[in-house]
Length: 333
Image (cartoon, rainbow, N blue to C red; front, side, top):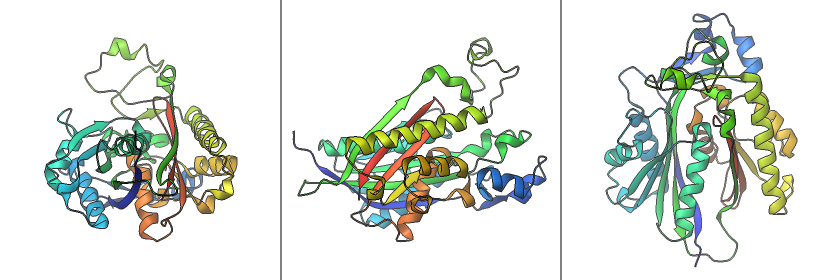
């Protein structure tokens, strides 16, 4: 079977207008700017208005990526949306985006890998294109996490924000050096579901009680911060190392690390362990917080538009998530 190269030909992102600063958080819980920033690296996060759907910012990000790529929406034949906070149980968020951008030829479906959603969707989409099944794909990740935040829990409410990011992938005949997705490493451990959880209101309580020993399980985001920190650092670091070993690459040969934006301390620890300096990590954490599946897509778009990530660069995406899930992907731009 002939394998095609896959290029990222455009990116886009969209953030709600409403800004929640650390000073705003001080009004809600017992905290302050210094406490939040020194522990997380976050100063601001964005929040959707009550009447604004997640599908709206998803479509905005998609349209910006399409404009960046210079293509007609009709050229898109695959849409994969990553989200844990889509507005509807069904139809998929991807179909809502398809409707808004006019990509009428595209097959559309959602994927749920929590904070690793963009990474998993990027791998999925790239493989569809590498085999020649499709030529042009839209990968979009969008979240309205603030609708699932307990604003009385100071350990979690300070972390999360809303936002969306997107990328256009294009398959081209392979010529010379391989481009696009070179290697990936994905993993999950469902036995550790209790480390991070956000149940639907309709989930049976007796069943939920078998998943966690918490006295009260509410329909809000909850995580064991210490366990999540350790799992994130280990999972992301070891995943990146496996790829570097398989590809016989040194850390110096990686131009950019594009990590999930959860906590600056996690990113710094991963950077140190894998040997890619923090100066070569694409960050958007300080201004947007943890936007779950959207975080890497937003960071990628920011660094692309700043002109830091260029054609020919070798970049590594890496993420961790509730599940627990983790993974990395090596991409040749």
